[in-house]
Image 1 (cartoon, rainbow, N blue to C red):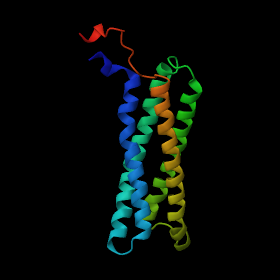
Image 2 (cartoon, rainbow, N blue to C red):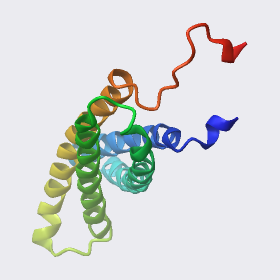
Image 3 (tube, helix red, strand yellow):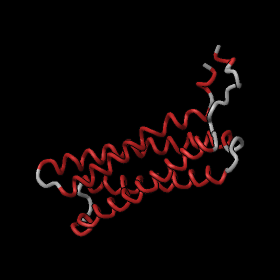
Image 4 (cartoon, one colour):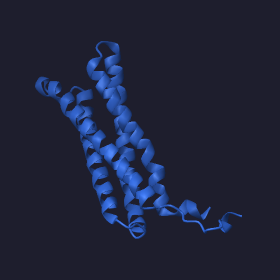
Length: 163
């Protein structure tokens, strides 16, 4: 039970759900651009709602990552990978936040006709570039955990603590 309170364990718990949501939101937004009639609005609306949830989760993941940083950075051999992971995560989060913030007025038709036409391409660009950073962030995070051993419990040779 004491492992529950280890700060570095909250980050992997909080990070996976928003990553999946943001990828699905991107997929739904792409589908909404190519679908006409009724389903177009359905995918567009779903993309907006999922984006908002994903962005909130991404900011929580940034917060929990900052909590884990001080603990994990002392345990790994190459802290530059951790810094690259953090920068990629922040860039990804800002891009998806921008996409969501543009989607909200687009949803309510607040933009003028010209901006209403180009804003989907701005959103798509932010989401696609954000997805690239999302994959990079995940790859670097896996490297921090599996190659550097960050946040991994190192048991004794004979595993006596589990008997």
